[in-house]
Each structure stands twice: as structure tokens, then as C-alpha cells.
Image (tube, rainbow, N blue to C red; front, side):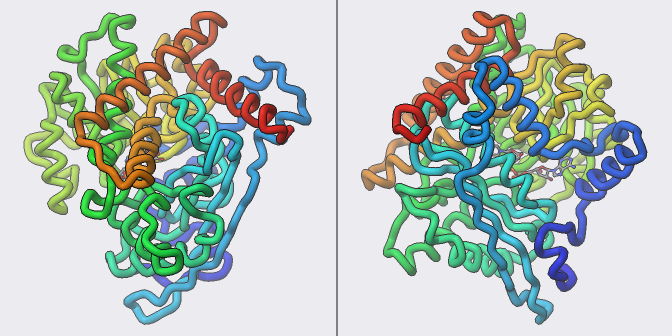
Length: 454
Ligand code: NAD
């Protein structure tokens, strides 16, 4: 159980750091001392630095004037709220909650809610901005937003998470709504958390399923939503594979982070005949060259088992995961995990970025020099928001599509996004990441101009 939060902690300083937080702090200290982070640690640069770097590079290419850039870099609205919650230890804990609406030129704001002790306003800003470009690249009619609470959700009881969720919703409901801003799940939040959010919003506004997406099937969620981000990553890989001389049936892959995105990507890759040779989560990393059964591992973890205690595998250092030879590496944990200190150890052909901002700019350069093909987060992990869009459309119509229809429509959108971005990359002789940002920013700027916003 967590200890009482101080005010300083509540406004963004870390409390009860988990492994990744310690790694991050260690990396920061290392960076402050002038060195690169050690392998396996998170990078010294923040998610905001990472997104800003890629944003500026694309703006340079688009020759966007400085005054216009400011409009598209800074968020439209930032809400910070205090969330005091009495937990089962009998004490009041105060968490900080954020909802940041980055840009709404193309439609209502859309973006996930993250519960993690490392959440702070800059991280939420970075993730909100990524959503703006992601929805534009996928061509779904949304703006970009993100939310978060700096609570140690992984260590809390379900009843405590429910209290935090309801209290957070009570404080941000005024800026939400099906035509204003529609949250969804992200790290440490899931369909259950979305159900509580919908229920709390409904107490004030009447039953409004379209106010959040990623809900359970029993509460007007969409078939296919839970798997959508992982499935979208696999669709992107399949689109890229022929040009890289890869066939999914002969492909080996490694997954970093075995939560929603990682475990679904792994299970769907396995359905195509690919072999998972190593995988990690916050408990550590495991390896087996002739294959780890993605379904059995999912069942093991879902039943409360520890990933590193899965039978018949070799436990390896978390730092060594990146160095396991494979065709496809799928980061699906937190940001900044592929950095200057470990990028040169990577032994893969392709990286499909399931996580947001997993690769720092310095690592990106190293990987390009190693000729590793990167399908970047802003396009690779758009599957979640695409099926969230389908869920919202179904909710607004009070109508339900079957799973096949959802998956087919998702495939169409993901393939189109891949072709549009890779076509632009070829035309301009740039990599996919830069091309994706160029396409996304261009569409948002055009929408803002057409509205007369700038
Ligand atoms: P999740 O909470 O379901 O899973 C996160 C996983 O990462 C867990 O298995 C956790 O143990 C693992 N992890 C945490 N720290 C780690 C570390 N230091 N090393 C290795 N593993 C670690 O979260 P999720 O929804 O799967 O999100 C994962 C990533 O995908 C995030 O970056 C998120 O922003 C991004 N994303 C999620 C969605 C979505 O629909 N859920 C959509 C787009 C992007």
C-alpha cells in the first residue's frame, strides 16, 4: 500500500517509484554527470523533448513560419486538478490529475488516460501532441488530447482505483463530452476504468456512452477495441514486410512490455506464424529461441503469474532484451526505452513502435545508421484510436458492428495510412517518421487555416 502523498509529490514529483521510475532517475543522474544512460534504462530526454524534436524537423521541412509553429506546438487547454482520495490505509492521498487538449482543428479532442506514478504535465503534453498528429495521419476526424493521474495504479486495490477514477472524472467532466473530448484507456487503465468514467459522467449528464471509448462489451464497447492497437501494429508490419523481404510466417519477434498493446501484438503475430523469441514486462525479461507461446504467456500473466516465472524459458537481464537477435522488435511499454545507451545493441531488422515515444532522437540516428527500418508510433499504434473512433460512431448511432467488420475497417485505414506516409517518404527521400509528422502537421494546419483559426 502506498504511503501518504505530500503536496510536492502530488504536483508531479515521483512517489513510490516502480522499476521504470528508478531506471529513469538513474538515467537522469547519469546524464547529469555527462554520460549516456546505461543499457536498459530509460533515456535522459523527456517524452516532450522527443516529440518536440520530431515536430520541429517536420516543420522545418514544411517551412512553417515560427509564429504558426507556436500555435501547433502549444496546447489549446490544460487542466490540472487535485484528486484527494481516502485509501484503505485510512489516510487521504492527494494525486495530481491532468487533461490536456492539444489541438481540436480536425474534430473533438481524443486521447487516453494514463495512471502511473511518473505522469507529469510535460509527459501529458507530449502525449496530447502525438495524438493530434496521429489522428490526422490515420485520417479520423479528431483532435489530440491526453490525460493522466500520477498514482501508483499497479499497487492499488481495484476499489481504490475506482475512487481515483470517479474523483478525476468529477473534476474534468466540464471539458469532456461526445462532441468535445473523448478519453480512452492508456497505461494502467482499461475497459473497467472506462466503465467507471462513463458511469460517473452519466450521473451528471445522463447515460452518455460516447463520452469515453475502450469500454467493456457489456457497456457499449466495440468488438475489437481491446486488441486494436496491437492489431494495428501487425497490419502496419504486414504492409511493410514484402519490401523488406520478410514473410510473417518466417519472422521472429521480441516484445518489450506485455500489457494490452504488447500481448495483443504478440498473439496476432503468432496467429500469422511468427515466433516470439523474447519478451519483457516490469518484472523482467525472458527468452527462448525456439519460441515462447504468446497465448500461454498471456494466460499466465492474466491469472496473476509473474512473467519471469513462466515455465521453460531463460530469464535474461531486462537490459539484454534489446540485444536479442530477431526480425521485428515491438516496444510496447513506456517512452524513452530505446536510447543512445542501448540502440547500438539492437539486433533487429524492423522496429514497430507500439509504445508512444519509445525511441529518442539520438537512438533514432543510430538505428538509421544500422539500417533498421522504423515504423513510428504516430502511425504504428494508431489502431487504438481508429477503433475508438468506430466505437464512438457506433455509440452515436446506438448500433453495433461485428468484430470482422471492425477489423476489416481497421485494416483498410491502417493500410491507407501506411501507403500515404511511405509514399511521401519515398517522394521526399525521408524516413517514415519524418514523413508521418509532415503528413500529420500538414493536415492539421490545413484544417486550422480552413476554419479561419489562423
Ligand atoms: P499496459 O499498462 O496495458 O501495459 C504496459 C506494459 O509495460 C506492462 O506489461 C508493464 O509491465 C510493462 N512495463 C512497464 N515498465 C516496463 C519496463 N521498464 N520494462 C519493460 N516493460 C515495462 O499499457 P498499454 O495500454 O499496453 O500501453 C503500452 C504503450 O502503448 C504505452 O506507451 C501507451 O501510451 C501506448 N499506446 C497504448 C494504446 C492503447 O490502446 N492501450 C494506444 C496507443 C499507444
